[in-house]
Image (cartoon, rainbow, N blue to C red; front, top):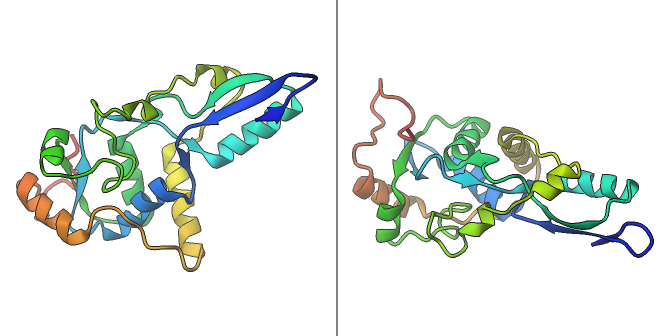
Length: 201
């Protein structure tokens, strides 16, 4: 919350922040484990919503300069990216040659996989917190908020991680648990030569 002018206030309500913080960091660091096969929680078109903190800070500075007042949901529009696009961006940024294996949400949940904590950012339809990726941000965008493409956010985050010493180890799925889950829920997703790299479609 920042003063705008007179008694007016500019109140920004940021959504999920994307920078070196937990959710994107865990996903991008997880990209270093994209060797052979990796789980890609479905559906691939599942909309994702977040705010790159550089876009947020720039917009806040502009709003203070221009004396913009009001209350705003400061986040990208719903569907700014999708689960498949985000995972592909992580794979590209980290230089991984892994095959991303689509796993249906019902199957993942039945196997006991925890959304968000074990698979960061993934919140399937029907979750009580799915609204985190469905916030109306029209007012903020009408007031000048602009969000850079997901590939740029992921690539820059990966570059920052590589240049920053002693970054804490990422959480997420244990590699052995992920491998066992892949054998169980996506046995047809192979790494054999000649097959496409992704089962996301």
